[in-house]
Image 1 (tube, one colour):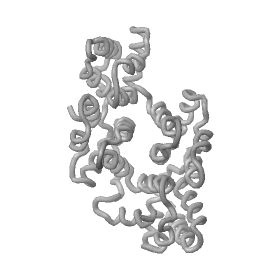
Image 2 (cartoon, rainbow, N blue to C red):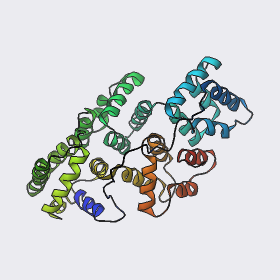
Image 3 (cartoon, rainbow, N blue to C red):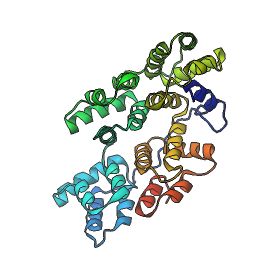
Image 4 (cartoon, one colour):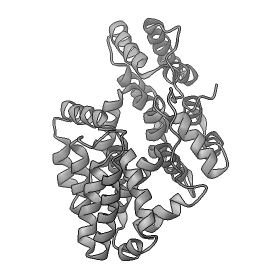
Length: 340
């Protein structure tokens, strides 16, 4: 299905990507513990790790019910009292998906983004969907922090690694996003939106190559508010000619990258809800995606993602997590979703 055909179907479908209502407030599920004591938590974790068979319940209780800033203080307190790194001790004590989540929660957000980007490009083959998800949904500030951390931790430039792993239009798009210069202005330039909708429409009348360059330029540089206005005007110009011209021309990871930018502009929580749904759909569960989204959005907009999930799929995110996961991994995921 072509890029624009998908876009129009999403906008015209009640369960699809409706624009997110503008609401201010805190929409994370994880909140700072008001009675926090880093030394006490460090001692609890040490005891849990040293308990025969490991006390996973205490690890969930401490790690998943503290804010990221509090976890950084626990790490420092543990290092001071035990003389060892908390992450290293937990890595030895835990295993499988549960270990992955706990270690992810101990990283700062830029460290975790850097870790996921590095892992996506490690070894044979590249997981382009992860690159698209992270670079396509983070703010300029978050991308700058990610690049700096990537260089500090891995001694390499993120852009250079992308260049060696990705080619073509996808490489161009990701490298443009890496610049972290995209407009974040909430004011809309109505005349510019009309003009750029027309440019997209006219590009489709000519050659596909032109369409790609126009698409990349607009989607990687305009603010999300501006993009939404452009899509509205484009919809007035044509319902199918560009879709028809693009049919079969945009596909795979490049299409996924552009759709990430489009869906992010329309409704970012709905984009993440869809990613979570796909991670649990069919045979087997993609726990990497499940972990990454729930951990990285737990102090940003996970409440909104859960609302969109219910609207789009008619059941709660927690219902599907209970159905698709088990054991300590299930417990920590449910705790991160705000389940007592």
